[in-house]
Amino acid sequence: MVAHDRESCRELLGALSDYIDGELEARLCQEIEQHLAECQDCQILVDTLRKTIRLYQRERPEALPQAVEERLRQALASVHASATSRPE
Image (cartoon, rainbow, N blue to C red; front, side):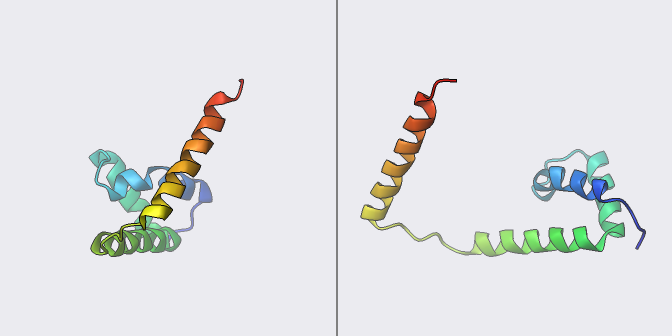
């Protein structure tokens, strides 16, 4: 493993979602893959994220009980109303 600065890790984090989703251009993917070849910490991060996504995709979301869903919608509406009524 080659030593590198943490700034390159931060740059990877900024593009990680698009990289995982396959939405980056080839040049950027190549740069990320080069970084991953040299950085064990980022390798672990990417592997863990991929595993988390696979686990999430396998699970079927459970429906919320009607009362919980209604309380959640009311809370979100209240937060939205507060945020949009504030003077700038």
